Amino acid sequence: MESAPPVKLEIDAVSKSYGDRVVLDGLSLSVAEHEVLCLIGPSGCGKSTLLRCVDLLDPIDSGDIRLDGLSVIGRDVDADAVRRRIGIVFQSFNLFPHMTVLDNVTLGARRAHGIDRATAEATGRDLLERFGLIDKVDEYPNRISGGQNQRAAIARALMSDPEVLLLDEVTSALDPELVGEVLGVIRELAGRGLTMVLATHEMGFAREVADRVCFLDRGQVLEQGAPREVFTTPQHERTQQFLRRVTEAGRL
Amino acid sequence: MRRALGDIDGVRSALIATVSAVVVFGGGALVVVRSPNWPRVRQQFFNGDDFVEAWPQVLDGFWLNLELFAYAMLLIPVVALAVAVMRSLRGPAFWPVRLVAVVYTDVFRGVPLILLILLLGFGVPALDISGLPRSSTFWGIMALTLSYSAYTAEIYRSGIDAVPESQTASARALGLTQWQSLRFAILPQAIRNVVPALMNTVVSLQKDVALISVLGVRDAVREAQIYTTRTFNYTSFVVATLLFLAISIPLTRFVDWFIARDRAVRSQTMVG
Ligand SMILES: Nc1ncnc2c1ncn2[C@@H]1O[C@H](COP(=O)(O)OP(=O)(O)O)[C@@H](O)[C@H]1O
Ligand SMILES: [Mg+2]
Image (cartoon, rainbow over all chains, first blue to last red; front, side, top):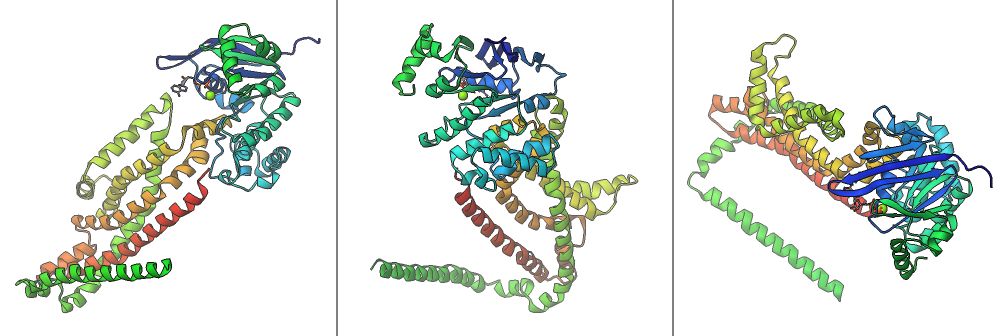
């Protein structure tokens, strides 16, 4: 074993409430460079909220989030710059319906990063080619399948060459036969050593691709470990319950 | 068989439509024409000689209405969009901006347009502030713009609100600033959403430009009044009416056609 890889992302005692509803309750978690971390847990346990907070799309109430050891929370932080270092992909793709796939993918580069159109498009085409979408560059999102939408959304998130990619149940909104193509893309990214945090209901996939699995419960990390440990010998009662329910639903 | 039946049905509906039209309109016309006062009304409102005489004068005024319409059409979309954007900005730093936008829409939607025209058209020139234009026409256009922009801003805002929050999140996640997300991701969708509503506003604006006549500006309505005062004949108002209809009917037909086409295009492409 070599020396432990440096910590990329640190979530330190983060709390977040919506009104009276405490969603994240002093949650701490760190992600090493090149690590693939899977967040599992029942619907409503705060996976999406955590990912949104990490990308600074929702403000946290207390705690700290550090990227490469530096806090990204606070008034003096350029949140837009942080968002460029972190990519996020949502369950519902959220491509911009009035733009072609290529324009969607290159929008951030062209408008936020000041890259000229030709350069941005060359990069965008390369990414789309890699994800098997080169013949869809000029299509509008509503003219292509959900799986193609989601692959394009992943390409869009990768345009800024993020240091961390957050994936929020990116296959949950897809027809079953389209799940595989999106998982294939994620598998490829994992293989390249991209640091990723993914919330997922695909336990089989989590088992295959994750370096570590975290079970979230009541706004905290209840249990974490290598997929083999968490899935075969879960320590906590509630982890066991959750996994049993998932198994019964036929997803493991 | 089906087809033959369909044809017969078609013929029958056409027949029913014709008969009912003849009964309704013919009956209505008959009531009017047979009323004891009809000859006098016809003399005062539908007099051929007066029509010919009033026509050039009223038409002359009507060009002014069209000019006002054109200026207002250029100004309103811009002012309204600016107000709508001001109102959609998030964050404590933009609180004063949002407040200005809210007060603006509340005030200018709350004042009857005719009062606003009177207040600005007579009031501002009377203040005699150097540097401010003194032309009633100018202030009439301002009144129309301010009032219509308040309504139109609300239309834009409903369009902005109809764009899902997740679109903003996606745009911000790309590193776009709040303004860039609005400009490139949200507004194009929002405007697309409200084009039909905006088009209907254009139709009503086209008629409301006639209100400027209360300032004594010599538009079609004012010219018609002048003719009436001189001749005690009201045919000039019919001339003005026909002129407005000549614009508003084609405009309404166009808007209806456009909205129907827009709906058809959307139902084809907007389904995920
Ligand atoms: N914008 C919001 N406003 C109010 N409550 C919210 C909001 N977003 C999420 N929640 C609540 O926070 C809890 C966690 O939601 P979420 O993070 O989406 O869970 P998960 O992704 O694990 O299913 C849920 O109870 C949800 O109702
Ligand atoms: Mg979720």
